[in-house]
Length: 113
Length: 113
Image (cartoon, rainbow over all chains, first blue to last red; front, top):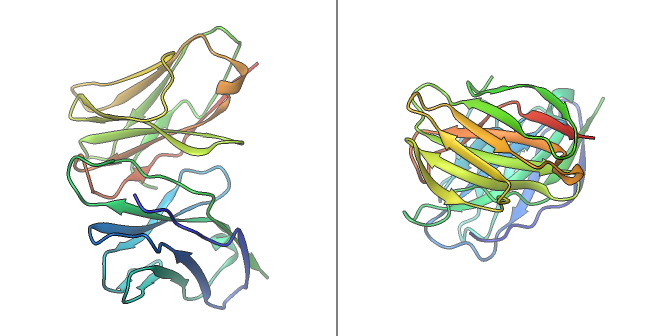
């Protein structure tokens, strides 16, 4: 699976949009971009995933650049409960390849009151 | 609530002992994954089972073993425990064996004294 690069930490004011970047310049055509978050020692929580097109769900939006080498997770109105480590993971769709999620260091997002 | 349950929440034991961690996947999910999260290693994939059979192995020690039962719950057995085995152990489940989204349980915190 392609390697990802994320900033180690970010701050965001409560109520504002949080934009978390992820670089995955070696991504290949059959690899999805997944985002998970982990709130202090809790189980990682699935947020969203996408292949080529932008995606939106009740939690967040995922913007993937046209060349797919980077993406941005957007939390539209961050709350204090969004303070967590956010992981960007690239995962292949090819059957027979690695099935597990490979977690990096992630981005520690701190939402400030 | 992801629908994945893990027991116990906390486990304290001594070096050399053996423990069993239990995971019940979400209803309808056939795949179970085990991950270990220690302070210095981050989240590491251990092993995956799909419909009762082992499908993928990660950085799982020989002292550790797992199985998935006919009712699809899974157990992770850790033996000859060492201080370094102290960690959070997470179980995740997904519908299929490869690319489906994984949903994580709340974890078991193991402390080896």
